[in-house]
Image (cartoon, rainbow, N blue to C red):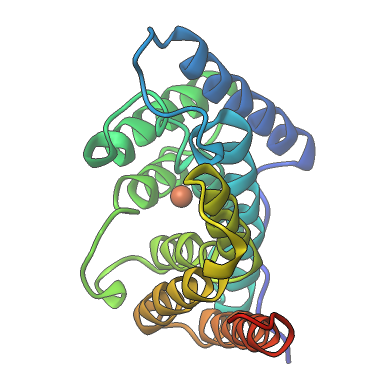
Length: 222
Ligand SMILES: [Fe+2]
């Protein structure tokens, strides 16, 4: 007996169109910006990075939603829009702003039921919640867990190593930086609640730990 897969309201073609919209929205946010804006030379402040993070979160959120029996469509659409306003709004306001962008998009495009739009927007609006994840709707929980997990593994490690370059650090500090990724990973893993997210976190942490051990084994000065 598998987990029941709920009926899809959003076709793949519609989802592809949404992706295109989100990418263009992010790119336009960077273009609109006047000089002296955020540090766009940090790769993770660019539209490309943000979009890539969003796609990672979509995949993770979908996997968690399927494993936990959440509504996959609500979860994946919320994941796709969750950071849409991130580059044009302050961190504290981006969740609410993202929910507004999603609502406007969904209301204008097709005949999505109001209850669907409401649940998508609620997940986006609550995705910065810092409390216990079990307080939230299951789809919101899947989104937050996915968002946390994207920082835990290879992606988080790569970003940290890139940052070392931007900060003119040498590779002799790599072990320290990777340990920081691990620490953050343990924090993130302690917040996730579902079995599916826990097992993804566990696997990702294990790999980062291996990487940290390899560094120490193979680089003489570490
Ligand atoms: Fe995010």
